[in-house]
Amino acid sequence: MAMVCLTDFEEYAKEHLSKATWDYYAAGADECCTRDDNLLAYKRIRLRPRILRDVSVSDTRTTVQGTEISFPVGIAPTAFHCLAWHEGEMATARATEAVNTCYITSTYSTCSVEEIAAAAPNGYRWFQLYVYRDRKLSESIIHRVEALGYKALVLTVDVPYTGKRRNDIRNQFKLPPHLKVKNFDGVFQEAAGPAGEEYGVPANTLDPSISWKDVYWLQSLTRLPIIIKGILTKEDAELAVEHGVQGIIVSNHGGRQLDGGPATIDALSEIVDTVQGRIEVYLDGGVRTGSDVLKAVALGAKCVFIGRPAVWGLAYKGEEGLKEVLHILNDEFRLSMALSGCRNVAEINRNLIQFSKL
Ligand code: HOC
Image 1: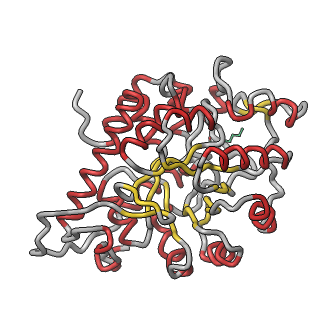
Image 2 (image 1 turned 135 degrees about the vertical axis):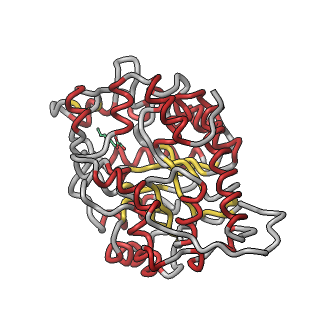
């Protein structure tokens, strides 16, 4: 089957993954309004293409945190890649290394951070960090990823508790016994105590009491850049800058946490306007085409990250499948750039967006 666009991979994954695994990745919280709006919001935005600008040569490269990547699309942290492909996150790491983009490794990976680093020693990776009730657990993983050459910590702040995902409850979804959250093999059980399990992982390990002061705590532990993932308002964007972090990912966790929050592309502008270039702003949620990437970059995202489409690529053909997803998105992005008169990423700006239709 020839794969033409990202939804081809979605259909393949839906057909070939077990129902429980498919439902887990597809899940949104409650009525899935925010999950669905992440995609629909792009369809409401129109572009203002420029013409006759000699687009015979185009360059999609950009930088994030000072590092060059091949185009402004990286991989968002999603959990449990071994559910989609037997080599799990090692395949993800190899694909992203080959394509030269940024891979944010999930805390809840089914390969350890050491295995992932060994699989793609030259890959550019950030690590998604949750803060645990047992702070020693957070500290130890920070030291491990620093030693392994991960280049930033992505502090995920929108999961004080896991959102209510109806199908996961109906399916009693949990990680099968042959798979583990490899980073904390054995340690998690002790940390959690008798609180039971969520997704086959000890429940109540995440600390719902985290607050802005914990950013200072993190800064005292690491010299890595800290990027906060899960900001949706200008107020929190300003606080992030005031607390000295190096980046923001505008994210609603793929609509899996608070249902009723904004689509990320709709939240982006107020955050970009507030930050005014003091730190980099990224986005995840709902990106499915090259023109979605173009719209997000035009509205001020330095880079976007894809979550579910990466998992669909893995489900299709592991490393090769994810490479194909990224190549298709890169081709579409390049074409959208050319058709709107942009020769390089620096030429993409808000003039491309037709605001009256927003
Ligand atoms: C037991 C904690 O990113 C998801 C994950 C976060 C799950 C936390 C699970 O499924 O959205």
